[in-house]
Image (cartoon, rainbow, N blue to C red; front, side, top):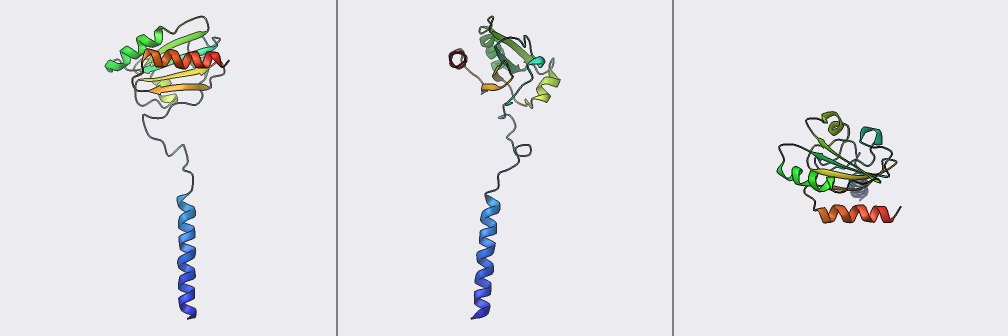
Length: 140
């Protein structure tokens, strides 16, 4: 009877250890889905008009048809309080790499401290952009 209890105890311990290992939180540096990661913080000095209250940065590529549409929509948001910058992967390769931008288009809306408050991956409508920016400006 004693060997059966030892085996059952070992199986129970193995089950507990397996359960604990499956609950571990993955390291975000090693476990991210390419093309779906938005930067959480940006250095405003990397972008146009770092003194502006808001930044709208569009990461694009000249070979992407949707990117041209997104870039045009983003340009319409420019104001005294809103700096807008379109960063083509060819011309701004280091900036794309620094922020791990590996899919386009990606648009981020950041505050004056560089905290990314909202972002979009893939095509985004002008209504979605205007609404997100209005929500942020209303919550100043």
